[in-house]
Image (cartoon, rainbow, N blue to C red; front, side, top):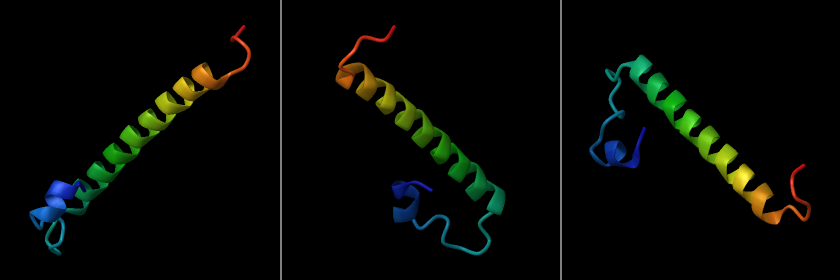
Length: 53
């Protein structure tokens, strides 16, 4: 669920399909996972005192 959808009042009704919520949640988790991985790689690349062998 995105902030814009919350602002519009979506996802607050009992008739909202659960699979849509599940799909959105898994999508958000996938994006977060991707960002976390990318951030980790950038952090290790920049902060590693030794070059990767």
